[in-house]
Amino acid sequence: MSGAMTTSAAPAIFSGELGPDAAALALEAGAADEALAELPPVPDRSVAERRLASEILAEVRASRRAFLGLHADAVYDAITDGRTRYVRLPELVDKASERFPGLVPTGAQMKAERACIQAHKEGREIDQGILCGALLGSPTAGRHLIDAMLRPVARSLALLDEFGETGRADLGSVLVERRGPAAHVTFHNGHCLNAESERLIADMETAIDLVLLDDQVRVGVLRGGEMDHPRYRGRRVFSAGINLKDLRDGRIPLVEFLLGRELGYINKMLRGVLVDPAGTTNCTRTVQKPWIGAVESFAIGGGMQLLLVLDRVIAETGAYFSLPAADEGIVPGLGNLRLPRRTGARVARDVILGGRRIMATDPEAALMCDEVVPPERMDEAIDRAVRELSVPAVAANRRMLAHGEEPVDVFREYLAEFAVVQVERAYSEDVLAKVERRWQASESRRQAGKGT
Image 1 (cartoon, rainbow, N blue to C red):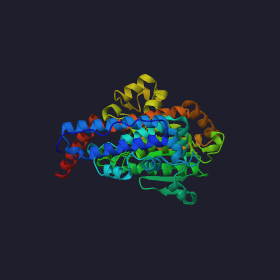
Image 2 (cartoon, rainbow, N blue to C red; image 1 turned 120 degrees about the vertical axis):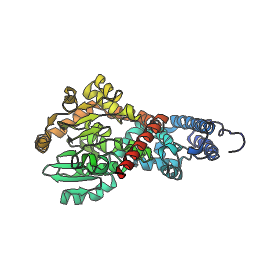
Image 3 (cartoon, rainbow, N blue to C red; image 1 turned 30 degrees about the horizontal axis):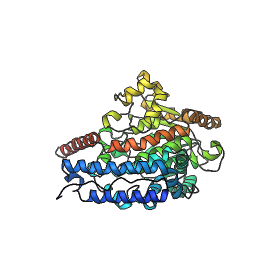
Image 4 (cartoon, helix red, strand yellow; image 1 turned 135 degrees about the vertical axis):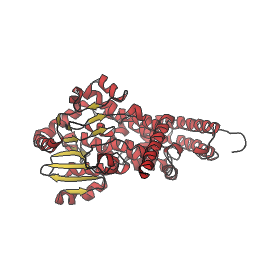
């Protein structure tokens, strides 16, 4: 780049009126995009150019926050026709880019970002996080958005009749099978130890919908399938958490993955699937069922987070639980909100901040799981839990427990903060350096394996 480097236009001045303020933001955001376009691609920038890009982005992001501080509810109402339509988060963000230029990245900008590894992106997802955080932070928009994400997805509704007839749905990375009163949801991401990918998140939401909507099912069971991974071949693994290779490669999107899993299938497991938005009570609005988790080998990261919304957890004697958030550098979903309720604040800090691993045979494991059994007795323990939790009164009581433990507004307010903090962590220098080192080490091991 030749000549003196300059920042973008002066920050927008807002009047409090939606139309003029949207126009002012669009003007500033357009100038910021022009200034960024004059710089080399992210990996080719000098230290000074990187600093300039950060200044440009910081200025326009401050304006986006100020605009949303004034107009978050009006933005949401404009996209949802005054909250008469339920718009899922991905579509909501897309519509915001069209209806309010400059508020969030365009589809073309996000397509260009998705083509880059995480370290080579401009970090435009941070702007999506600002929008999502503002909308979730509003009691009006946030509650409506939560409801929108609790509705069944289109794929689930398309498969429901067939699942009702056959009792089986092979979704790709997830298999759902009805056995008696239980539906068994089995993770089949065997090549990567059931690590969470964008595909797995989408398949899981479909699976959870099917379990909740099928009248023949009274309880759901989560379990990991047998592995293809050489180290664990033939063994069952519950979950290795987020796929760090996908994070390094830029394939862990904020909207579809980081927020989608929390607002989507995990929240549906806790609060049920929304079937009657006009209902006056949760028991008429949602369908809820109890959930059992069978933990074999380990439940790491997102896998351990799942256990915090289950009603019965059974672990094999050699299993362990961990939330390696400090090591990975990111926030462990809603683990910070939910884990202290299970373990107490001190143990939760040891696990989240200190990286402590809890073995199924440790005394503290009783705070995470209800039963520890030898591997050969796992099927028997699952069957017993299914019988116990299939009693009709269980669903009603677990509904009331969830309502008392985590009111919707507590969940909403946490997610409003999480939307911003998590995406900023995903683009922080320490996280980018860690995932790159892990990828390099993994590649070295893979190449060494080829040579033997």
